Amino acid sequence: MATMILVFFASPYLGSLVDRYSRKAIFLYMEITGIVVLGVFSVLCNVSAVLDITLVVMLIFYHTAYDSIKYPALAALTQEMFKKEDYSKVNSSLEVQGQAALMISSGLAAMMIGKMDAAVILVMNISTFIAASILIYQLPYQRNAEAEEHSNTMKNESYWKNFRSSLQYLCYRKVLFVLLLTSFIPSIVIIVANYLDPVFIYDYLNEGPSVIGIANIVYAIGAMGAGFVAYQISKKWSDMQGVILFMAVFALATIAIFLVPNAVTFIVASLFWGHSNAAIRVFRKSYMFHHVDNAYMGRVNSLFNAVKLLGQVALIGILTITVVPAGQTVYGYFVLFIIVIAALLTTTYLFNRTYNKDKEKRVSL
Image 1 (cartoon, rainbow, N blue to C red):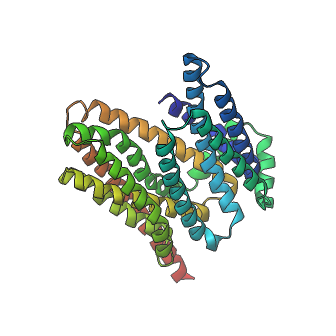
Image 2 (cartoon, rainbow, N blue to C red):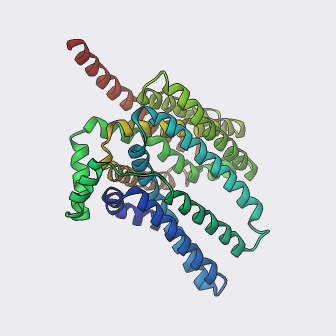
Image 3 (cartoon, one colour):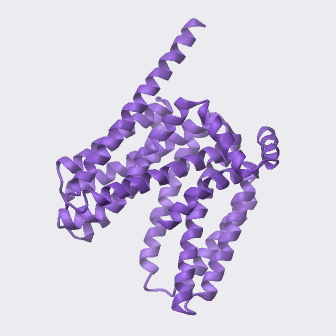
């Protein structure tokens, strides 16, 4: 929780960092920093219990900060390097690769932890950072002139002023801001559900850990398949239509847990959760790439990451002091359903209004 709060307040700085400098250089420095951090950890681990705890805390903080920089930088770099007509294909491919990598790494971790020495596992992690550094270094990247000019202007201003300019950018694009905000709701719900699920399974359903294990597997399978499905749908539907479709699927999966609270429903809902959340992410990225200027991509992403963190903390706090102590965790899923439905209705209304306005403009021309 403390790490989440620190990252929340660091978001203005992290987003500005992505827009100030070469995105390739940022990625390269992050991988090199990862090598150093893991190297120090592997050398100093098992020296003393106090030092081990300190190192673990530092490692957790680094990982959170790494992700907070990586995703905005990846979005900005992808938008900068590829053509508009390739956005859907690239984002779908990245989603499939990301989910596949997550499944493979989780499987390897399960096999190695407890059976192999921690130092060996750390060395294997370091080797992946080294490999990533080499691949990133060889990336054929040329920063576009507009982004370069904007970054030079940013360097003459404070980080806070850089972040304020991104707020002004979104204030002039209120519909864009709200559409992106509502599309993040399912991902917020997933994080909150990660806190709610164990209590629901163990205390409410009186089931064992195998249910959560199976649910996690089918969630990952659903998420991995989302990249393929999203790309096919993107050929016929717009990005925001794809978001609306899968938000509806996500809402149905959430209310199903409340209406039919048993292990089978939970596992099936997890499949649709994983699939719809990943598909929404693909469509949202493509929508952002088409509507957010590259010069602001890092700060806009960091802003929404900060809002997402705030939403997660608030929702977890509300559920922790309401439904969980009462032993009625099933009502937590009803609360999450209401939030998703509100986001879905808002997204649908704003999209239809924007679509009709664009249609009227085309007719008048």
